[in-house]
Length: 109
Length: 115
Image 1 (tube, each protein chain N blue to C red):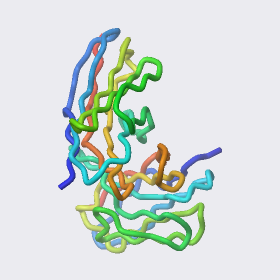
Image 2: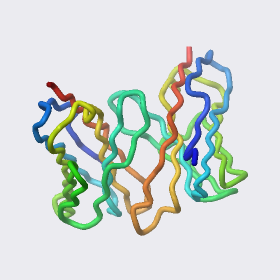
Image 3: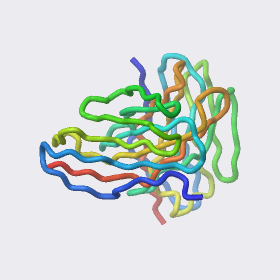
């Protein structure tokens, strides 16, 4: 079966750095996505990785290792507004998205 | 641009009632989809469409119907609501899946409660 694993909840301090991991087992691979979802709102796109390595976008970076079935999202200089759920999704060989259950990130002052 | 517009935002139904969730996009996206989101689970695909007149089932299609008569609209019909269909529903659209990111744009969501 297809599976995406990510931690259920993480806590971090304002101004710090946090890494959210995602491991996957899917039928084929056509890219990995990270979305941010604030409580009661829709998911919004953060990043896309299709090749191995690090993609940096401001305070957010995303890393991919296809051989290990592993990705992480790195958030730097955490702000209170970063409190949200972070969803990892993999596009499989049929170009369908398989979603993880999301990681709820709690930022403390 | 409005993006993806979803209505209603909230709805309470009794078991056995039917209803339609509306979804419209103004980005000329070929691909449209409906997801449900339940606590502790990932987004699950209900139905999707790759163009007008074409629909297909996703992971959890039972109890739901869709149609795609135009590029812009993709309504989701609940035929006979059941408590198990209590959930938050999201409509999402993108350009046709293929090479490149083809990022999904989501509607604001519809919270449905079935009593």
